Length: 200
Image (cartoon, rainbow, N blue to C red; front, top):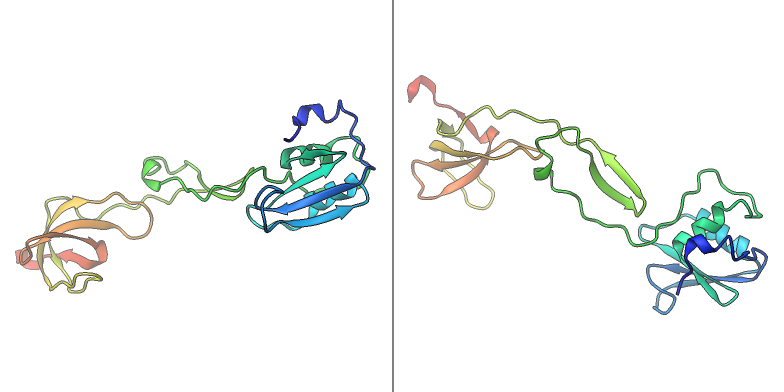
């Protein structure tokens, strides 16, 4: 069981004590972890903090029969009592695996300034701008010409009616249409549609 990071400084941690480091994506009891032994805990902490890390990779340190998790190792590294030199670019190591969930653009489409998040690692959230809004050229109810093509179900050139304008979520502008020669609706891009000339 790991210590509360707030108690480490009060406990008078011994940076010169030998330490063992487990590196990987699980606990020390799981298989597949890399194990390294260090003469001092200071060296183990520096290695855990400054080494190149794969996404989701964390380190657990054991020293003086106590176990220290990712947040505690980071706390010791940034503690004023830490005896070794530090890399200025070193950042706290992630406490858990990163989340790969990306918020749906559907919930952000009305606010172009809302950041979208792609987790490079836990505690390191990269914000990117929401897609710039594009305006649909055609409106619901309009009659248009649909070009031949189709990815899953092939279609013939025909006149069609726009039954729904799909919200813009990045990429191409989409419409749901119903062809005069088909008994079902299909989704097409704006590039697949064109105005009917001469009222044809």
